Image 1: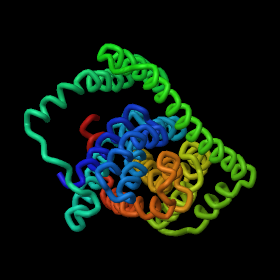
Image 2: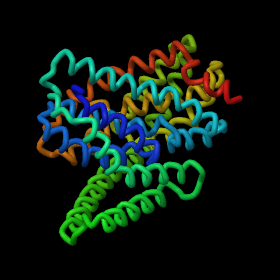
Image 3: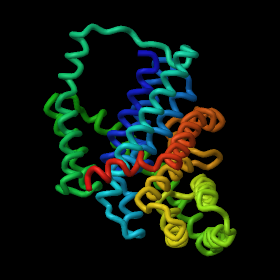
Length: 339
């Protein structure tokens, strides 16, 4: 399938993101595997990094989502309903990303050359060869959902299970173990450097009280509710370009929630809107955080290429946020069915 590796990357990011509940961890983990593979098949560098940076953000929409959990606690909303409300938007946004990739590749095949065709027998053999790892991933996700272990413990379980599988298959030697350990330390160090920078800047903003002053200013304008909502979303979009998502939520929600509630908006729906705007912020130039995670994975790709690569995904997220503003039932329909 033209663009198949990019499409598979989006799907994998959605699944892994649901397990990890972290956009940064998803971007780093999937990017480490997917970007070299797409480049090996001569994919355009922009589409390689774009689908990883954008796909990595899907984990904070599709439940279980750490952002939705924090939102539910601060807004005193049912976290179960928030998780249910995030299912359909997460699936729709993933499908919109996939359709956009397919259309772009159809219009310009050189962006993602087709790989070699394989027989049905080869496909079956590949699936069977991966069955143990698929079972491991399934157990990790189920364990998270039913509460057998926390996300951190799930990472340890997954790593230990992968280590056992490598030993059983006799595919692990000292050199491979050494290389994996070095890659883990390098990726982990890169993620923490990005996070430390974001947290330092968050502390600076908290001291200046700039977000609080902007929020109070928006509330005093006396504009129609939907216009006020759009202004709130623009502010979140701007903050998301240089703030780590959890810090942004903790800084601003206590200020905006009373305003949104007084305007008559559904707070479950607003939670999904906030998550979508956070997604846009994380892939917005000039300082979208997942783009710098991708840069750490592929340091030879210029930042200008990464910026251009994420723009189509950013545009799709804008379009979907507009749809959610116009049709709140996209988020609330499943919550109403679930009661």
